[in-house]
Amino acid sequence: MKKLFKEQKFIVLIVAIVLYVIFALLSKEFRRYTTIIQMLDFAYYVVLMAIGVTFPLITGGVDLSIGTGMICYALVGGFMIRNYHWPVVLAMLLSVLFGLVIGILNGTLVSVMGLPPFLATLCTCMITRGLGTLLVNKQAVPWPTNKVPEGWFHSIFKLTIGRATKIPTGLIPIAIIVIIMMFVLNHTRVGRYTIAIGSNREATRLSGVNVRIYHIAAYAICGLFAGLASIAYAAATPTVQPGTGAGLELDAIGAAIVGGVSAAGGVGSIEGTVIGVLFIQILKIGLPFIGLEANWQQIILGLILIGAVLVDVIKKRKEAAL
Figure (cartoon, rainbow, N blue to C red):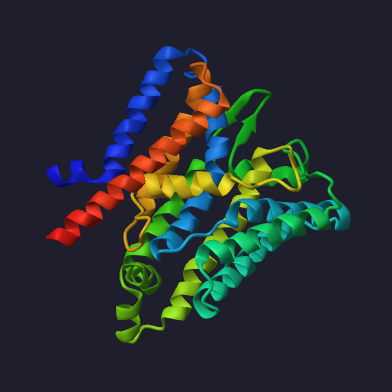
């Protein structure tokens, strides 16, 4: 129990619960069921991006392309539905496949070509942003609404009964994905070697591990989850706007770091990342209800991230001193 209380993800979970209680006491509107549904709508695609980016972060890298990439993949899927009347399921598969391809590209640029992760993924960030905009000719792309049969995919995340009753069905698939990815990170070669690469890449290579393959796999997983996030994003927004997405990756990366993923690599967990998303979503949704404008939200989130990184640095120094 004493060890549990020292873990960052546990502390963040306690703080998130306390924050929720404070916001609920200060604002009657925050306590409403509709507010919880709204928070979950935004949380679904953030948590999917965050789970994916946990893998590059653990390797000691980063993926800055997931925000604009998510928008690009949603635009591609919506474009095929609107212009070529593709079935929604095929458009969803295309979005996920596109994300996987960009993820593999990122991994290749970083692991094989030797580009710094920041630079490589910044380039693909710009590429996906421009590509999506060009494809749709700068026009917003709507996916089918939940009022038509083709909009069945909305029920994956939110089921509407009657005119007003909304059930957050997305909690079930998200929970299943979290459990699967916890197993992948902790009990498979991909997960173990991802952690090993972040801890000591050279030692991992010398032990006989094909570092390049597993390094690429970490970014491929990240791209795959950005593709999945694009479906959740399309379900949460009426239309997908081209040229957007820049900055959305910061919510996912920030959540992972707040949840205990080390900025230096080698340390992290899926459950910690999910707790980080919960914390940031409560903060972002709750602050406006107590009268703080968007600029203050950014300042507070920035300070929290600085604090999380400092905690990680202090831990690393203590471990090195032992």
